[in-house]
Image (tube, rainbow, N blue to C red; front, side, top):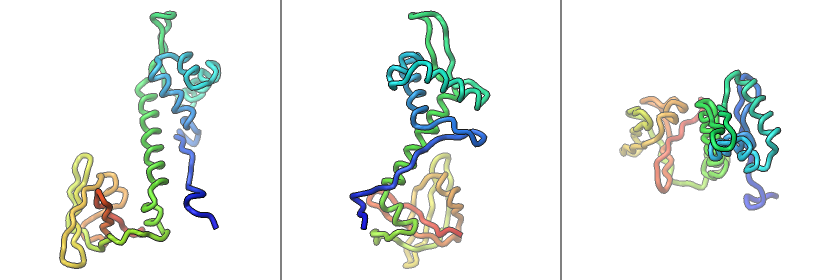
Length: 187
């Protein structure tokens, strides 16, 4: 039998546009290097790829998106250069956000336990949502615990919307050492 020390969950992340892959780990490295070096040739050298490969990658991605992800300026050694467009910056930012989120989940043993595997945490309190206050970034969820206690969890607005948390929902307050999370059974 395999143990947790011998294996771990892994996955590859990429962004798609209309069903076509446009940015994966290698592409993110290219965009990041262009952002740092402000040069396609220096970026190619930095990531260990040929200039031609990087140029073709950028052209293919821009053709798929029908919009530029880099902006080049001609002018030789002193005046030339390349910068990411706003779209290029946003793609790189989104890729890093998703990759970080997925990496965090894959490494979070409590998450894997909470989605159906055995959970070791005993600090789970069942209760009913009494109030939801959404802010710009975070949301405050007040939960009346079955024993007459109310726990307040500060979680992201995105989590409240993704879980569709509303007053009257039956939830569990899963208490971690540094935070209170909210869990809801899938309907």
